Amino acid sequence: MKKNLLLLAVATILSYVVLEIAWRASLDRVPLTLHKELGRLQWLAQPSKKGIVPKDYVLMIGDSYVEGLGDWLMRVVSDGNPKFNAAHILHDRTGRDVLSFGFRGGSPSWTFVFQATVAFRHMNLYAGIDVAPPADVLAFFYEGNDVNDEISRLRFVMPPDFDRDRAADEVYVREYFRALGAAAAATAATTGRWHPLRNAHLFDTATKLIKLAGKNLGKKTSTLAATDPSFRGGGDYRENWGRYEGSRVFATTRDGPKPYPSPTVEPFAFDSDSDIKIAAVWFQESLRHLKELFPASRVIAVYIPTPSGVYDLADGIVLMDRVRDGISDKEGPKTYFSAAALDQAHARTCNAIAAATAKAGAAGFIDTRPHLRRRAFEWGYLHGPNDIGHF
Image 1 (tube, helix red, strand yellow):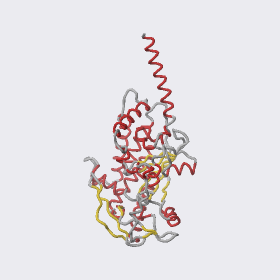
Image 2: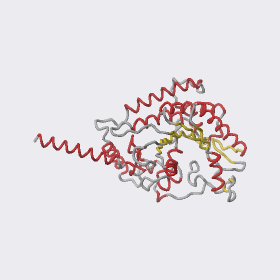
Image 3: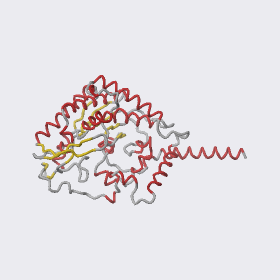
Image 4: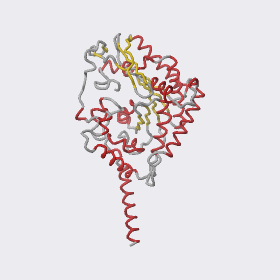
């Protein structure tokens, strides 16, 4: 009897090991809408690589622009594990493996220092998975709200022991971010769904899927679709140009003027010089953290313009500030801007981030504005129609 039980136990374990290996080799076949249920290994399910574990790869880090939100995602989200963002284009164009750490609503100081550190170390917790540091790191800065996000963190999120009067002090911020990075490394090693079968990723994912199915039982739409508009079903996608109709602001294109949604929430134009100075210092020290986290990697900053920075717009555009109270986002008052005023706002933010990138000793700074502006003139809309905030 004991021998039979032992044989059964050994056979069960060996069978599971085979299934676990096969499961990990098939991560890139998991539907996009279920990637979050993969936990620590969700990043390896991205189809922008030749294999499951990337080799000699490019790591993109940033907010929803790196995640890939926008109408392209809305159209294809239900099509299995589709291509829908910059990582897929970069992989197709260059043949290189690309991994994306895109954290929706993130800001550089939190995304680069804490979230990216945890995500990278989490992937390497599993036996048999060895994700080497990237060859290149593309660190995105989104002009539209990254300054606003950093100032919101300063006002509402930073702990009481952070000296807000020294928020623009490079040395003070550097030491704080080093401590935050160390805390991220410790968090990656000790938190999460730990159990004796921590390396049993298939078992872990199966339990999450069962819980998700239980939540969705009897509902007409999945929990994911109900709470995340970017994950609406592909069959439900409808182009909605309603925000463009009736606008008195037009973008100049090769094919003539095209209406631009107005008003629109773009808080960058409301950022003060002191706000930009603080955000630039935080970006600088966040890049420095990435250089320390990946000492052999080339770290390159990528500057992404806000929508109104992509188009050649006539005077009179209406922007609304985004007011954050630490709990929710609100729309501030409507304000009219001239094209010249917007150009000045774009330039001061870009110049500050470029200078911060150089001071951090990064390998390069890519200003995407000139290229995108040319494409917008040649092609017309690069955003929307439903999501004017993302390409």
